[in-house]
Image (cartoon, rainbow, N blue to C red; front, side, top):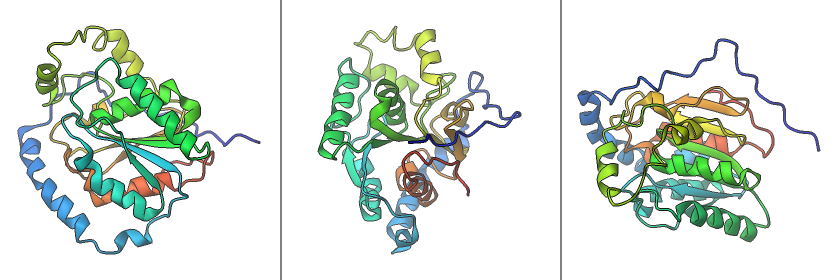
Length: 259
């Protein structure tokens, strides 16, 4: 079997400066309140998704953001099911941080879902912190992962360029996070993946700096901008359409997104 052609990054393609990124402005934080309008727009869109690219039935695991859980990703999973995929919740309840056993639990979940799906590779969609976890799963077992899609996930650059940092530190104050937050770990998280990767970001994000949600150029990695709030990624129509387009690609036939 011949391998799929690799995208060659353009000579002038440069990743945004994530190390110097700052927290989103106050006006963007206030704008997060319109997320319910994004949700309503999707709920009232009728059969719009019926015209979107259809799925091939492969499994897709959706990982929620920090402090969120299965309810927050319900609409996204419903859309994926309507499009013809087999969506799965991440199975760990509410996302309260990164406990020591999480990596092993999520890797085991992907392995089990692949086994139950006749060996088909699993796509991973991670919202905010969930995208950071999804990337690390793909780094651990790339042979089991078909593609990774992150939604406003700050996996690169200044980890304090977020209004959620202090809350994360509060919930993890009893854990030793020295290694997790070390410079070496930060550099490792920022390294591009070997599997097809789509990093969705929004300059309207009022929680995390959009620059930190983008990847450095790599052959099968792309950054796609949408107009969405941070809390709205999982039910924003534009974001959902990008997800539908990316998942519908044939395995081993990855191509960059064409708006």
